[in-house]
Length: 321
Image 1: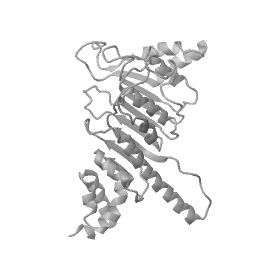
Image 2: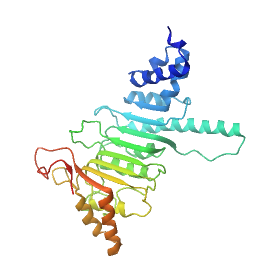
Image 3: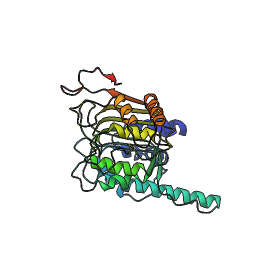
Image 4: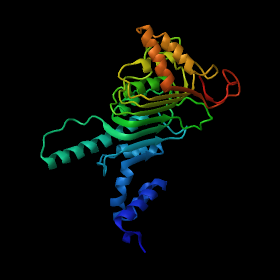
């Protein structure tokens, strides 16, 4: 019995599984015209790129997508990301934005109503990156250009290496442009960042930011933040984040293997952030104590990945109070 004789609903489920597992999804769509019509929306709804070549081909195609994407992920092995990866990502998101604009225009015409406003960002349920950035990359400005086109609910940027391999995938200059892009997002609720180095440190060096500046820009919708395998992260920046007014939605912050300086020093403990909270300028005694209570309620600091020697390796894995 041919698959084409299956009920449409069942065939859609078969195609969904096939497209998710097949190394070359377009081969599945080429089986028949019916496969193309039914399968393309599944492929476009959750865009997945596993090579720079795939990303370039997608970004260079100008035709509208079959639907507005709900999720976009880029997973590149450690050595495969070239210096223009975020330039290509910007072009890929621009294609998504053009599809959204075309969809909105069709909807406006069918409803016979006026212009609803210029589409500036692509709303996504998930924007996920697993790739390296490079310190000597002259195109890191495209980190901001690309990410500011999106407006995700959940954002993940992790290194592509195994968890036990401590590497810096998001270099300080890339982190700087990332934080600029975050300031344009209005819908983000969950952020996961790992394998990164911040453009700041406890001594106020190597940074365009003030020593007591909040870790992230104002994000009123943010609910959870996970920061793992991070270096040059000042505890005062975490305290300032929790002290900022308008962050009432924030219910959990996890710092896992986070260091104020290098990985050869001690990890950040919760009491480090509590001490930083007590020393923040511009707060009275009552506000500082209220902030300490908020730190204890929301923040957890953890040890997960061990080293051979140095720092706080005598501590057991788990929560660091």
